[in-house]
Image 1: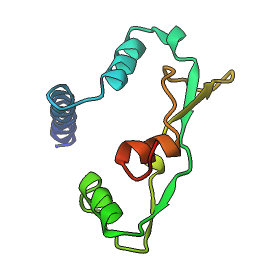
Image 2: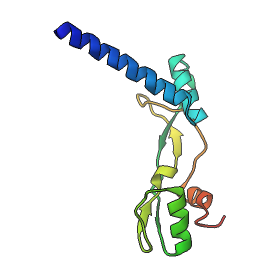
Image 3: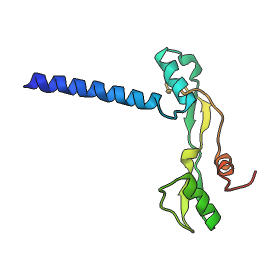
Image 4: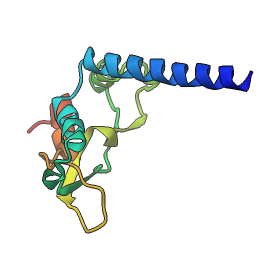
Length: 124
């Protein structure tokens, strides 16, 4: 009985892995992220010289226009006039990695202000 359960667990894990890979391949994926995955599988670690972190970013919703922008960009977010939203997830800051740190491929910084401009919440 234990052998059958073990075999079923292995088959389930294999099926789940195939489904995950299939969904990634057939979805709208980030080409930079996919390139990082491919480079890691090919042991091309020389390009991963940076560490990425988030810029602290919050915005106070003060009008129906800004509320509409936030709701359109982040559907399902429960917000209203007077709320402050954390938008840090839309930022990315790169710095050179230190020895022993896991690295990522360096990219273009997106500060809080850059992200707010992209959303149309502030002017250039």
